[in-house]
Length: 111
Length: 112
Image (cartoon, rainbow over all chains, first blue to last red; front, side, top):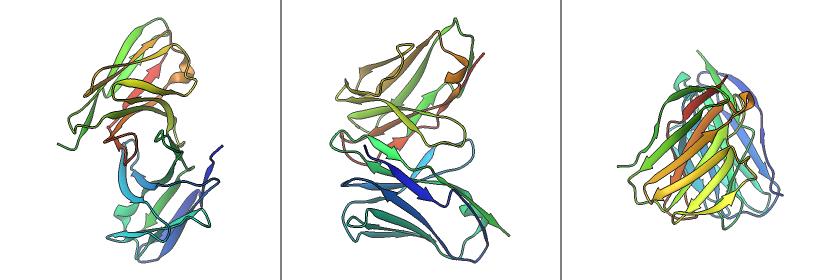
């Protein structure tokens, strides 16, 4: 059974600082996704990572994938308050496109 | 149009009521999904439709009944729900049975 773990569960950071969220998964997968969810809102797609060594960047967020280590990271550079949200990684469980979500990381950026 | 829409936004129902949630997309996506999300938890998959056929049912109780009338619409019929079914119900779609899933805004359901 595919399991997806994220850490930390909660992250409080100051504006301007850098930090990384980690996503580990238990079995081989072809695709890994990162989503953002604001309080009371739906999920917004951030990145899809399709191959070993894939790196994608959008603004202050950069995601990478190491399929051999079954690890993805979401790096935040020079955080700003607008990045405060819950971030989920999700792994494709196979041909059925069944997404297994990580536990989520609640990011709070303090001024 | 890159949007998934859901109605209603909020729903309060009693345990004896019958109600339906509606989801619509006009992106030409052929896979559609229902998820349930409890507060401070990740979404949990309930159902997957691929080419209007049910392909995954994650052992969801029969008081939840999905329906896919056409390639753009997905319904979730609710009957005799329990208070623990209160949650945010999210619909999503993707181009095929693989690929990025795009989520709707959700229906926040409260069962009294």
